[in-house]
Length: 163
Ligand SMILES: [Zn+2]
Image: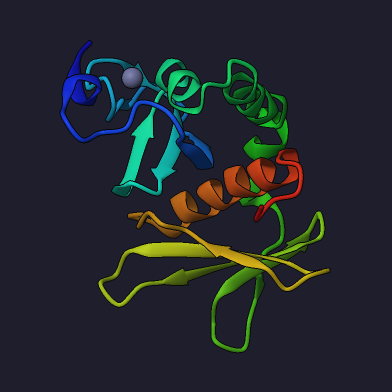
């Protein structure tokens, strides 16, 4: 048991995944075991834990006690890789506020710059008006767009998102 698995007060079960992101390479370290290099980042939250842990598939499986969902999420991203490779080249429109956006797959995806110069994004489901805003801050508009793509795939893959 390494990292937060052996830290008192960190729950072992009952976590929920809020999103998954493909970094394109193993560029992060799992925040739960604090040892595994990870490419697919599962963002996990828990009612009894403040903040979010970005973890790998193996830890996500244990934290959710679900040995199907985390792999399915990664598969959905891998299946969308070709489309993602063209994502930045598609025609992005500019909103009246000057933000890049696209309407696709039932979502409005808007990219914006934060006050500190970093970039973020928001996905709004057009049918319901429900939206999610990127928790992370990205160093470039392109990275925020790519993260928004992963977010869209995650929401499409998740049955009954928001619940
Ligand atoms: Zn881990």
